[in-house]
Image 1 (spheres, rainbow, N blue to C red):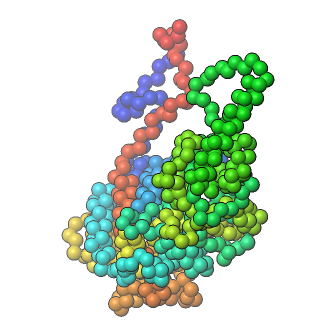
Image 2 (cartoon, one colour; image 1 turned 180 degrees about the horizontal axis):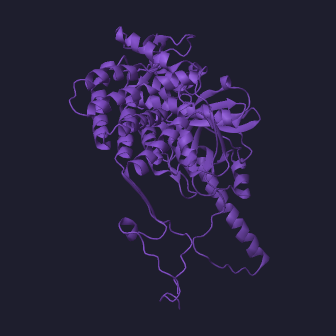
Length: 545
């Protein structure tokens, strides 16, 4: 009979075999902080215009070469529970603002690093968390006083381009003016009068070949597909959109047809053909020049479409069908019926073009106002075009931010240093132990200009000192000049290095939220995973049958 080994008393006694538990400062808190510090360190080197690229091969062997923190953390598939909280905070930032994901991770990593020093000095995690909360309240109180620019008219192309350039500069340093011009053109063209701007209405089509400067914006949609029939183009076309196949109609119920003679067989085939011809003729009589379908075109249907001079386009994605229907203002029909005037869409020109060696179908809206615009990206490699797409995505999200709240604060570390300077003064007014946490919060804010300096190859301490000096002299907009040879500063407003007010507001909130949540964890209990090998029952137990 096997010897029964008793479990240790306490929590382990209540859990299944194989469960693990960590508690206390050393085992839980420092372990979490260490994981988060290392995670933040790996993303920190990708921060700013001179940030390094990361090469990531994800779980399905797809390769990414990018410095975009949002993509890096999405593809890394982080397992550690504490680091996962940081990932969630940066994903919330991505959902709320669409940019500043790296800012959240770098700042929360710096806050936890600062907290570790205080914990080793004997300050409790709850006191540090309270201090961080107070510092956050003070930052949000100071932030509106740092606003240096505001865009009130979203249709003003020059002002909007000025606001979009900095967010693209951090991804594509050197090409920011051209890409910002594309983004502004695409966004302003579809800006609705009454409702809010929808990011999904700016589509991207990547076509291999040529160079970035051959990229263009088109009002309407572009698909990397061929037309189905012989009609290659149509002007001022009425468009019918179907989600079903354009073919001889199949009956809903199964049935058997008994044919006794060759004449009956001929009449039956001819009846099917004439029915299909009648349907397509009625569609043509309604003025339709283009039919878009979500499924296949039958050979017989194509023959009649060519006969009546109707252009046939097939789109496999139901989402593309919906977007196209929105673009041309049509209704998606589930059955092959003649569309009414209300169900028909309109497009100025539909046709096939050869871009590089790729044939594309375009739906252009020239005279009428389009609801969707497409940026056609050209580039030498797929990875390069993916990176351009991410930069455009950030630019479009910045435009959405401008449409909601057009206020800007200085970038290049100017806002962080000004907040840090005022927080150090605020810490002196606090009586309790929170003042240490507030001071450490100010030190953590310095990690943003330090990251910019480190990635640009400058002396980070010297850069921070120079910015502090400029701020002490009353220049609130002084930030790090990455183009200077001697760790110099520049006026961020003059150089047009601006950050959205919303980006800093939510970034600070999410970074502090994540770091205080991680600090307040004092126990990690890892229950045994389901699906593992089952323990063998003890000899002589009742389980054996």
